[in-house]
Length: 470
Image 1 (cartoon, helix red, strand yellow):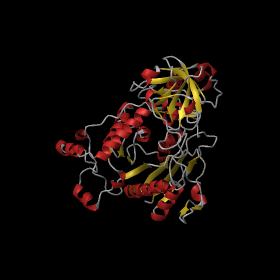
Image 2: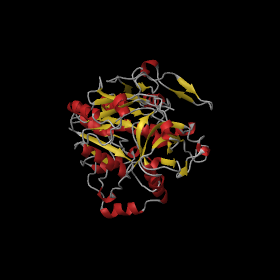
Image 3: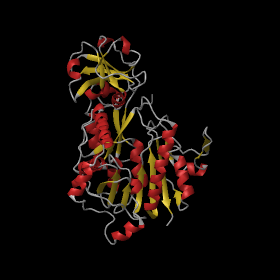
């Protein structure tokens, strides 16, 4: 079980720090939160404030009189980060549960086909003790048992005491900032694009780093944000609008196809690298109607997952109204951020990680496709930052070694700020004979590897900054 006792809020403007600290300090929801957590400004990042939580605490459950609510693993991970329990995450309740009852909150390590599987709507009893034996706090039931499984949304348990205490801050400071892990906030500072620049964020959803880049550019220039669905692109636009940023442009595009072929580049002529006009409404509507059964199932699965987290469903944007991007000629951008899909083995809190060696290698191969595109799109003299939220060296140091070996005009450069430890040097020989080469010792000193077990108490994260020779 990998837990964390800090949370970070990135502010849109640095002069809002004191205002944010006052509002956050007043946002206590229980006596425990008031006594056990505090907010302060970060010493090296002027636009970040940090909440210092505490734990583990010894929670006494005797006053719950045996009443209990069992929640899903993912809902529990949200609670460990300061959330209350939303009803979609409730898996089981005691038989005689009434609204307002004090209840113990335990976790079902739900995974169909395993011993930890639990059917939603179950009654808490002795037979579930082996499945839900991890307790994370207690609180007041928001609904009776009968209503708990009828409600599509709402707070199922208002947490009053937690094993790990972090103060919830949802709904605070609209337009002034957003919750963001510390290493994620470091990324934009490391790239540090100049105002007026043209920047590409290749895998941008939900838009935290894109908007941070625009903020550091004083909203001058262009931040082109790509992601693979219209819904994710719209999510980025919504966040940029909430923060009052006009320089962020979000487009639906698979970043592995972002480089225009020579024929496409010639046909574009003197036109912009972006096709700002949408396709005809009829053509896009036809594409929308051709949504495959597999895609529909994927959308339904995502909607269910959001409900399990107590999140509102994503609004499906009208495809006919979406701006279209046709890709970019080589060497189009002065700055590129590639925070690509990864195995997420560094995220915290996590009660379980479910992945295989084969999946790790497959993810690294996909990342290398993205890296090759990034190098092609980067202008000579330009800077690129590659980051992941995993501790797997195959996705981190091995991928940077791949870039350095494949593209001789790319070099690692120092980073500012540099808050983490060095990367890994050497290599690893897998059991099947595959050799995974990492970095040279001098190269390892130039990257940042955030260790989730270190005293900095952050998620596991990796950052490398590279420059293309002029």
